[in-house]
Structures are given as structure tokens and as C-alpha cells.
Figure 1: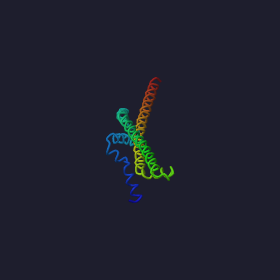
Figure 2: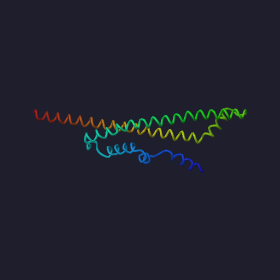
Figure 3: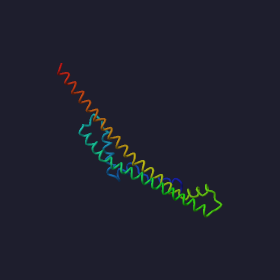
Figure 4: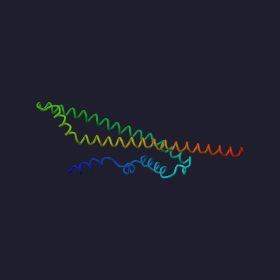
Length: 168
């Protein structure tokens, strides 16, 4: 297998957005809502629509938080186990070959675990994707909140202008 084939094979384990959306209904709902909001001008969306969307995203947010926590834990556990395994292999190499230096044994152990180290990189990418979903969902919720605040301020200003014009 060539380097490019190995790289493509490993990279294919990291899902793109299209695949994430197809495999997870909550991810798809989040993107549908975000796409809907960003495809329109904020002033075209009614406060009720924005509240409904914000409520939907608020109900998805804990799911994304749990998902991010789980993938973070998976990556951390894998990293700890990999480190333990690398130390154990290094020690066994040193025990079997008294002429080896520690750096030689570490290098050999590292080479033996190269596939697992690639898996760690993949787990890191998955963790980052899940954290990005969580952070993105929070950002869209905050955006909705700011639109609602702006609409409320506009209504207040408009109502006050009407009151002032009738008083004159």
C-alpha cells in the first residue's frame, strides 16, 4: 500500500459534515435550523419563529455537550492506554536487548504503535468535530437571542415614537 493509499484510508475514518448529517438526526436538525436562519435576513423572521428555533436548538445543545464529553473521554482513555502500552513495550525491548539504549527502545516501540498513534489522531479529530457542533449550536442560540433583543428594542422604540407623535 502506498503512502497516499494509507493516508486516504486513515482520513476516510474522519466523517465529513454530509456524512455526520446523514448518520445523526440531531446533527441534521442543527444544520437545518442554522441554514434556515442564515439563508434569510434576520428581520424576515418573526419572534415566534426565532423562539421556536431557539427552543429546538436549546434542546439539542445538551445532546451535543454529552456527545463532546464522550468523544473527549474516548480520546483521553485511548491516549492513556497507548502511553502505558508504549512504556511496556519499551521496557520489554530493553529487557530483551541489554545493548539497546532507551532512545532506541522508545523509537522501536513508537514504530510498533504507529497505527495506534494514527487512531489517536482520528479520535482527536472526532473530538474536535463534536466540540465544534456544541460550540456552533451555542453560537446560533446566542445569535437568535441577539436578534430577539434587537427586535424587542425596535418594537419599544417604534411604540415610543408612536406615543410621542400622538402626544404632540
